[in-house]
Length: 172
Image 1 (cartoon, rainbow, N blue to C red):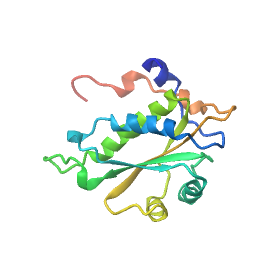
Image 2 (tube, rainbow, N blue to C red):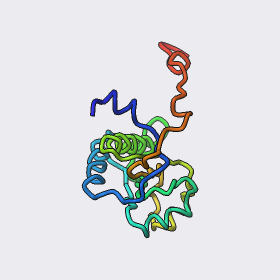
Image 3 (cartoon, one colour):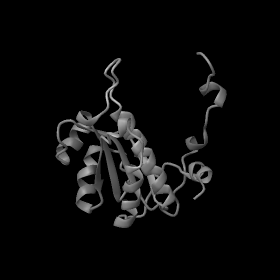
Image 4 (tube, one colour):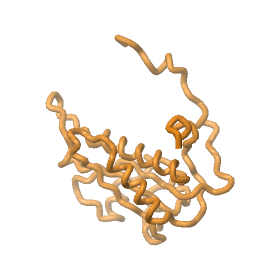
C-alpha cells in the first residue's frame, strides 16, 4: 500500500471479528517490528504474542480496553539492554518500543488487520498473568484482529490540531 494512503486510512479499531490471526500475518508484523530503529540498534524490545483463547482470557482481567480482540501483542522493553544517554541516564528503550509498536500497527493495517494501541492496562497484572520477568517492562498493548463489518473510527480520530500549534522553527 502507498505510504500516504496507509497512514491516512489507519485508525484505532475497537470492534473485531472473532477469529485469531493466522501465523503468517503475525510473522509479517513481527518482521516489521524487527526493522524498527532502536538506540545503537540494541533491539531491547520483547513482544509477547497472545493468539489463543486461553491467552486472551488471561489478558482480559488486565485491561478493560481489550475490545474483545481475538489477538494481542504486548510490546515490552528490556531495560538492561537499553541504550542509555550519558548526559542524564535516560533510557532509549521506551522510545524504541514505541517505534516498534508503530511499525507493527502500520504493518497490521497494511495486512488488513485492525489494531488499537492500549495504554490502559495494569502492568502488575500482566506481569503476573504472563510471568513477565523483572527488567522487562510492558509498554504498549496492541489489541488486534480483522475489523468487524461495522467497525469504524471514532469521531475523535478526525480531530487534528493545526500544524502551527504543534510545530515551531528555531526556538520556543
